[in-house]
Image (cartoon, rainbow, N blue to C red; front, side, top):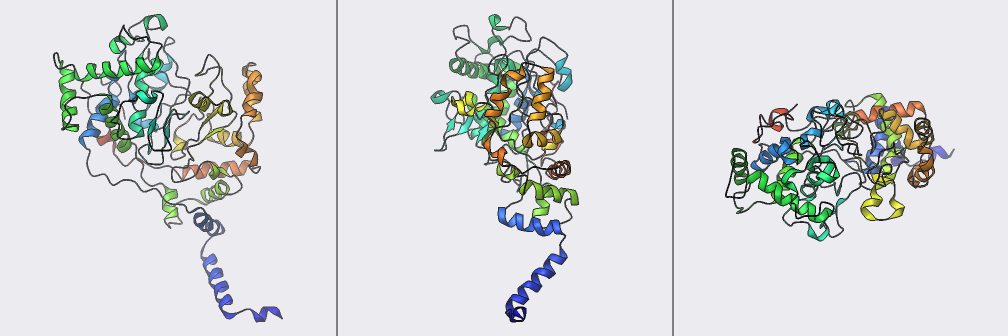
Length: 456
């Protein structure tokens, strides 16, 4: 018979493979092939030994409400360390409020930011070539920085994150505050001296440059008059930038970037240890989820690489919820940054590390369950239908949302409830703590003395 003519060397290979497979479970054997085929690599955190002066300055600025026009909002207001670097709200609450998370929703006169807070994990990694849901701050093909300031963007930023870190301060509802005629009729909502009377508050670019200049005056003074807060900040700036003769907004951006990169960098997750060869690092269900993720679920088409994002823009047909960044109802997403109608309702693919901790999910916080997020990727109709029951106006735009749904999603293979559960379990294998401890990441106080956002 033909089987007796099999070459001896082939029999040896077959025996070796059989022996190797017998040492692995079915899931492990499949994942070994997946890891090799996709050339998956584990996360490699940067080896940090001590907090640097630039990070120390950035830490103070991050937690200090002096960075906002009304002095009642800081970076740490929405990016809370104990809540996985987000605020736990569907959409952030900006100026005009106090406290954190649910506390901020009590004041009905506070301003809602019609976007879900994005987490800060690993934002210093080189894979991040765009920031914000719509990617309005991004790297150009030639490596230069692109932002809403265009050619007016100041020079001297260390990296793209440093550029992005200076834009929340110029958003009226987020941190800046408003003019008197635009709703800044109270101390808690007024932009104060950060916008000069001579500048048109409706001219975004000129207003932004004016805010940059006046924010520096507030923090480090003009050299003629200095208060105790400015004296403390000058010490931090001088230590962080010993060769600088004058300080500008790039020094703030670079310090914030240094701090965010260090404070929110993640350790390896169980999945990383599994890739490195520890077959006991994740559970049987998580292995099943990984097979669905890289297999019939096609999740890795968009959630790729070590950060689990392609950093591109896709439409998921998520309901508008009656609140929009571009008018009272619509959020055009990426299209507002590029001007391309084809990119309406598209948003940047979120990285998935620690994603199970950062709910609610979606660009407007529509989803309160990670299982619902997964199900919506495969079939958006049920959620769109439920949204219309609560708000009939959703029916007016549902067709447009479906029309702009990413074509990649149409190629997804149908999955079962059990598959969804497996995927959810796999995402838990991407959880990990930050490299930097709370003791290092959280200051004891800030130079202004306004310490209300120094929380674990």
